[in-house]
Length: 479
Figure 1: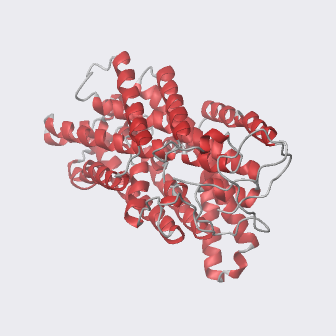
Figure 2: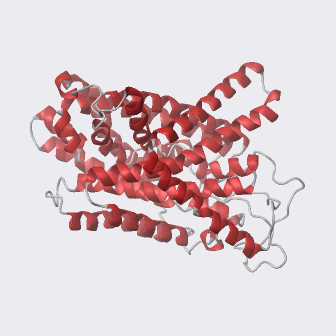
């Protein structure tokens, strides 16, 4: 999906570049250079780019999210509202960045352009962890809806088998090349919207306030509960950046990437907030905490039977599969951009005969599978643990993207009209503050493991730099 920028081969380097070198313009690439793509590659329009954002954001995580938030009580809805405001600020920040730098790689390109190649590497590494860890969380929620029909006793062994199937089949689909990707994303996006739209509209008419339970059921302070619930809720918005990551496949990326990001985020926000309120109000609090398929339980509570819940579960299964196919493609794209710059192992940049980065897809799927197997003890534990890990590693790209926009506004933004400059600075500052708030709410354990995983990338960076025989910054190659 994305090409990045690649430094020229240095004398003494032991690694061969994945593609023939290209000329380096003085001063590096021009800001806002058009996204690079493969010759003859198919491009997405605004509709498919928006569907990619919605399809990536709405996987099965949101279908399991009410159960995770129910641990905190209705106070988590306050956190959800705050997270939504932050997510919209991030979407607007990405829109501004996409106008300046529509090249493939999204946050990686933004960070490298503003702060240098090490910052770019940290973004690519962190986002890569977010993507494959996020796939593990998506597939766990997906299993909960599959088990509405099969393995209803939730035997762990069979749950793991279902989860591994949900990881490996999308990987195979991508490895073979998905020529009908655009139609597939649009269809699955429509199908996944059906139960969410239902709960966000009709479901609100069946709310019973007695089901909400204690406003703050966490046993901690209000501030602590909101921060902790906000970190979990942020998981539901992971993916708003996917259009920028896939910019090389979007027609007129300077215009369509930003629009798709904002439109997709606003659409998700509307159904998320209202749908979660409806689930809280139609399922008793204690039952919701123990539920592995909360939207199905809500539908059953409304109609007093099993058929409605089964229909929602079927839609969630389709939704999850579509999200896993999309994220399996995305998970290899940012490492590929970094590999073309010489900042990731070169194998991540190579494509198979179907034109997809096979090594990145296979490696990421195996890591997601390992994380799922190791931590699969209960739905609540594995879902929340993996969610917090992927949220923390996602905050790093979000923080540096917002910082890159603020940096540009401070240095070059004076050419903008004062009104627009003030607005853009305010939005970017809000996005930056939102990132720090999400980081603080992740909890000590998530921060510890997330920081550990992030710093594991430092030896990789040293290794790839040493293989190139490079010390310090290297000039970038134009897209």
